[in-house]
Length: 189
Image (cartoon, rainbow, N blue to C red; front, side, top):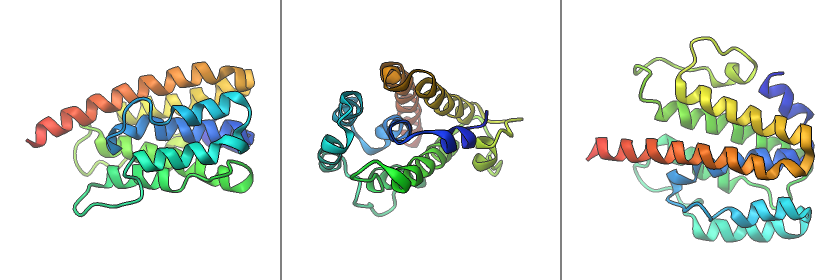
């Protein structure tokens, strides 16, 4: 099943977890530590998403410079900022579906922008990748696509009981992106 189909079939909690997982993997671009989004994960695990999600989201926004674009910042950072800024205070209904879908696309775009193995000018069609067209995909984008798919498949199979596994998938992706960001920063200096 394609990622687009998985998103279409996901319930609100799975969509919130999918969007949060994408954002969590991109936190290194915002200078956040590994724990900055932990309260949001906890609200999903507790089942009281509507009650604690909004407050936890506001706390994360206060800790991360998500809403303020800096002059000259690159596209990958801008996309990560938009993911956090667009997160709904109430992760339900059409709003969380739109956010999760946008996070999926933006996270794939971020990974494409950070890809070092693909020659400049070789555009990766991330929207087509989500629909199942995966031939000649760059390694970093392929790994992110696998993570996004794994998150939604885990939640579809196990419900909220799969959040621990989802968090592990996200943590692994965050470590990969942190290493890419670090390598990129060393290359610029």
